[in-house]
Length: 146
Image (tube, rainbow, N blue to C red; front, side, top):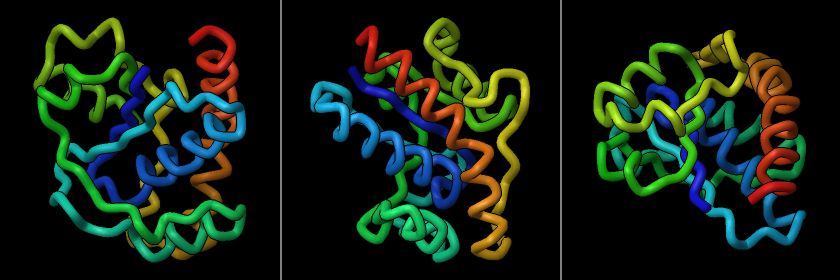
C-alpha cells in the first residue's frame, strides 16, 4: 500500500506527516506500507524547513535527508490513499485527478491543519501536536486493516 500526504510547499506539514507516519509503520513491522509526500506548489528536491527538522528531532524523527516532490496526476494515481492537510489541498488533488475522490481525505476530518510556514520551532511543534493524534489514528486503521 502507498500513502501520500499533501500540503502546499512540501516543506512543513506533509514532510512531518510522512516521516512520523513512516516511523509508525516501521515500528509496527509494516514494510509493505510506503509513505510519501508532495506539495501542490512544491519545487522538487528542496529540503524540509529548518523548524520542521528541529520540531521532529525533538521526538527522535530525522528529516534531514528529506527532499520535496511536486504533486502530479501520476503520483496521485500511483497511491492507494491521499491524505490532504487542508480542503484546498484536497481540491488541488481532485483537480489533477478527479477519479481520486474516493481515496482522498483530510487528515483532521473537517478541519484544516494550520500552516506553520515562517513560524518558530515551537509553532511547528504545536502544529505537529495537532497532527499527531490523527496520524496515530490513521496508523491504527491502516496497520490493522492493510
